[in-house]
Length: 334
Image (cartoon, rainbow, N blue to C red; front, side):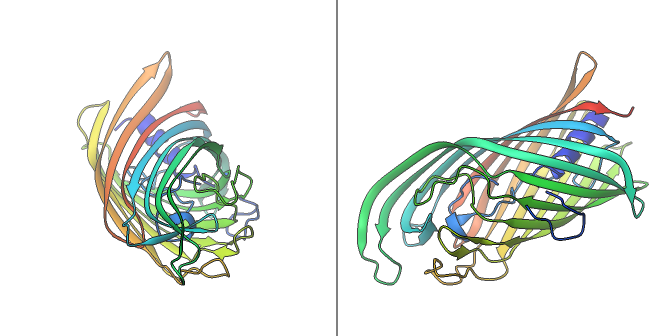
């Protein structure tokens, strides 16, 4: 694995998130709609977005990353989903979005760790097809059928901050991300990329990387705390996520590995809009990844493809995730 891929992978870590002060409540850049537990069936944390070299923070500099995200999913026709204040079943969703991220790894240190700040803005198209819409989950009276909605929208901006440490082959970091409800939220519509709520994610990542063999073992665990959506009076419960990756450099430019994640809602949804009750969900995914590094002039460029298939879904849709990442340093130390 090359220096460029290391930088590219770590840039991905800080892509979704805002820091007013590291370790304090942050006040005020989400992922696409995936029919699932929680309002609209998803949380703002991008499941599968981290993986190889997740615990590594690169040298001071400014980094750019583009993550092209694809998701196709289906929700069991026997299950209802709260979406934009509506209750629907037999849902099929499709998302095609790009997450544009900038990361500044500063020369500052706190407790011996380097400080990094980042911001992400998602833009893309969401399509949702619904077989049935009910007036409420209590009466199950059908008020619509064969509904379709599609939109090209800008999602909520997410801001982030990270502290990263190194000790031999071990690299680890702590990250805080904040979803700011400033995106193009379509109240009452099925297709949305924005969440219209404040949310904060706290996570920790650890990587063991041997530069001689090119073997990388990485893991990330985190918890997302959600505010209420004032348009629907819906508060998504607290969410837990776990990601893992094992990869090996095949050449100086090419590496491959296996990846996966597990999502589980720890507390139930609440508020007047949560008529389905706690609606706690979970899902697991497994897949593979392939990375290739090259240079354009004197600029190193890192690319990575990920494909994951979800299973063991409960109160969530089950789908297929695809990610194409392109990252490069704009300025960086040698």
